[in-house]
Length: 118
Image 1 (cartoon, rainbow, N blue to C red):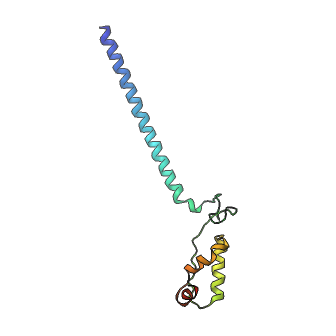
Image 2 (image 1 turned 180 degrees about the vertical axis):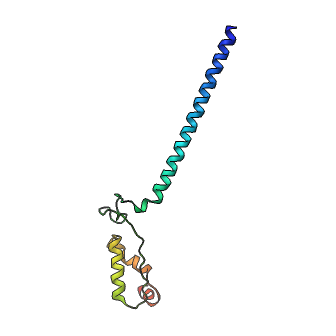
Image 3 (image 1 turned 90 degrees about the horizontal axis):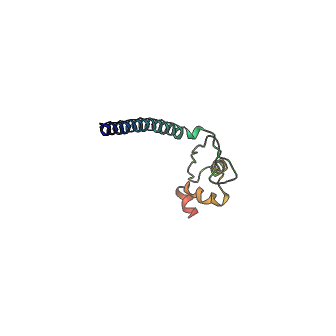
C-alpha cells in the first residue's frame, strides 16, 4: 500500500512537472511570437528612423535619417551643364568617394556620349 501511494505520488509530480513545462512552453511561444511581430514592424519602419550607423561610402559621415534612392537622368549629350549639376548633387548626397565618380557617371551615359567615353 505504501508502495502504491509512493508510485501515485511520483506520477502526480511528473504530471505536475509536465503541466508546468507545457504552460511555460506556451508562454514562451507567445512571447516569441510577440517579439517576431515587433521585429517585423521595426524592420518595416527602419528607413524612417534616425540611424546612427555610418555612411557606407564614407565612415566619417552619418547616414541621413531619410536615406532616399535618388534618380539620375541619363546623359545623351544634351544639356551637359545641367546633367553635371545633377550628377554632382547625387554624388554629394550619397557622399560618393571622388575616385568612383567617373565609373558611376559612365553607368548613366547613353548613345554618343557612351561611345565617346569608351
